[in-house]
Image (cartoon, rainbow, N blue to C red; front, top):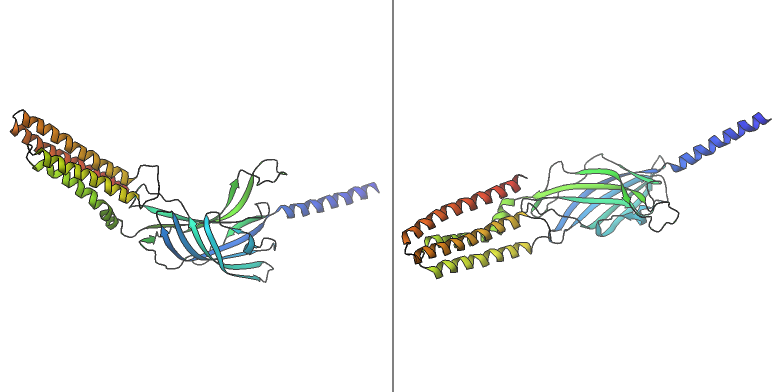
Length: 322
């Protein structure tokens, strides 16, 4: 009798342990995406808009992605269309069309030779990794042909993956031993690059180079014409500073040293050297050494031009080649 009771208790404990194990296994949400368009890229505000189809297949009817879908980086998003069906194997199939206005972080260190990575992350706001995990549906294409104003999609840059997103907070849940939660996330990345970066480069930096040439022309004015030489340098200085402010007004805020900062810094320092050389040449003229002043101007003109061209070529080509 005792053996029978022990045998039955062992069977029941094994049965309930299996039930508990089944309950702890999270449901898998097989997720796929098809991007129909990316548009309204606002480089200054770090925003872009994307239209896409999103589908999900899962078994737990409590997930209800039509209500619990979360896109953390989205400024706003709208479900333009949703449909729900049941597959032959009993899984729930949800198809929705989304229109999203996204916020992202741009890298502008190499502007205008930069490329950007657009990120799209999705989660379920109600169920963590103990109940739900994403899996990627990789069958078929995932984006169509669409035009990007001034940009193009980098070949083989599209990627999809399912990862756990960690949050060091319990979101107010006092039952947790640690303020920590983990949510499964479906993550999409797509790289874009500028179509004609060199054309944009000359558009934005032409004024800066003209400013330098204006100051540089002072070397070919006689050293005694102090007002003309200083006038050219001061005018070039204001032109270079104005050009930088114009470019900065179209770029996102950045605390890092960018190509724009580097080239303008080189230009401003070169104009300063022109002013220093002018002062030196003027002093030689006042010492009744006009021939020495002319030789100094010619030598300084060659050295400064070579230095300016080499520094610009180095930093620009380094940015272009990445």
